[in-house]
Picture 1 (tube, helix red, strand yellow):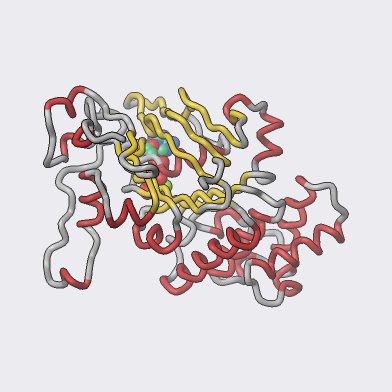
Picture 2 (cartoon, rainbow, N blue to C red):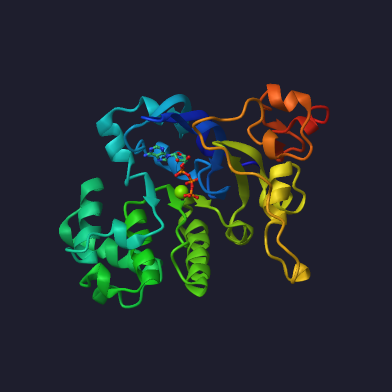
Length: 326
Ligand SMILES: Nc1ncnc2c1ncn2[C@@H]1O[C@H](COP(=O)(O)OP(=O)(O)OP(=O)(O)O)[C@@H](O)[C@H]1O
Ligand SMILES: [Mg+2]
């Protein structure tokens, strides 16, 4: 049976009003994150992944503005919440981690000080109870010697351990949804793999749902249950990871996968997608991918394709499939 969506983003638009003009960073983004799943949001640099993640927490930086759409969490629109309601949700029920843990951890306080502060901000517990909770979180994220970690400063830890501490901090208040924006990009490959295993464990053991933002299809293949491929601020293809990565339908997804190095193509030139990602300031008419698409038709220049179901769980936004929707 299909799990109910915990988070449901519908036709989200985020714009930045800049001196150069209006940048359409997120442009009709729609996807769900279901309870207990890891949903991957993947796409090239600049396609609106981080801005979408920040929008969920209503943390889009100035001069960005959420201009349309809805973000339902447990069926309630986060865009209609008051500032104080949002403060309680942020870090309480929805947590976010970023690429660089050292930028999110405060260098002048011990890890223990920071995590107990976060816990006590959101939960009515004593200092001792908060410490207890912190130590058990450290153990849950595989930090060795929790008592010792509690008294260390961030810079005393390696990047991998910092990211574990960051995850412990993010989940210490029992968040149901973790938005993880490129959580492994700054780490060595072996440490990267360990953090991905940890995220899957936290999903399995603590039931936390994860929105995993990444530009790395390998990370998606290894970790995600479902995946949405974003292009110019909206989803062009979405479905079970296996369907999207092995039975991809959208010409852009084809291009992304063809651009990956593969042992069987050793020695051959990588096939990059011709042309550039549109720059948000001047989005192409119709389908944003049409200027780069080898299958472009007249309709693609005029009308933006909607996401339609090809199979029960496989959606694609492409006019090539206009006739085939189920
Ligand atoms: N503060 C800002 N002012 C103006 N434009 C911005 C700002 N922040 C983001 N943008 C624009 O929004 C678009 C989406 O940016 P975003 O950071 O979400 O991309 P991304 O998919 O996370 O890319 P990356 O893989 O590089 O992290 C980009 O075109 C970017 O130029
Ligand atoms: Mg980003």
